[in-house]
Length: 163
Image 1 (cartoon, rainbow, N blue to C red):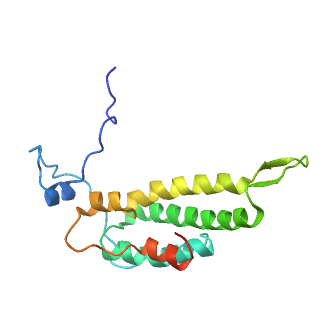
Image 2 (image 1 turned 90 degrees about the horizontal axis):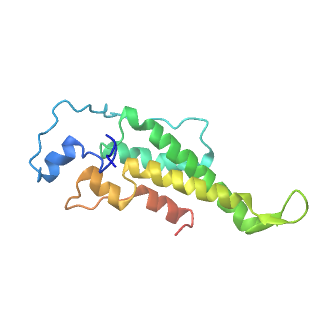
Image 3 (image 1 turned 90 degrees about the vertical axis):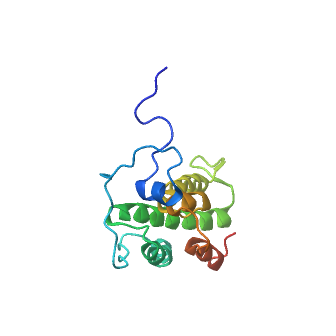
């Protein structure tokens, strides 16, 4: 079966290809669109919950300083911080009520917070990867380097008592 134009590995950004070296000796795309780098740290939208706003305060400066966050990537940061807020709230509910709660008919059912936790973690993984918030995507975005960079999300988790 033939593949589609989107099947296979994702294309490596030109800047990353130049940084890491063009081992395949393929043509370099000189017309690749580039996002507009932000010269200032964007303000967190009001609609994001308190815990998500705290994540924004840790992540936005780091992403801006490292030239990862562009104007066209703000939606990824918004989605990540909103999912982070939902995840933390659902974890609190789950810790308080446990894995089984009373259902509408009075019988035991799975705590709906468990579903919110799982969905939020998947969203955080997707949007966090796009922003370079995990080790593998950081290497992919930044090409590695001699100086390991601090991860503000890890610091936020430690501050909040996460693992």
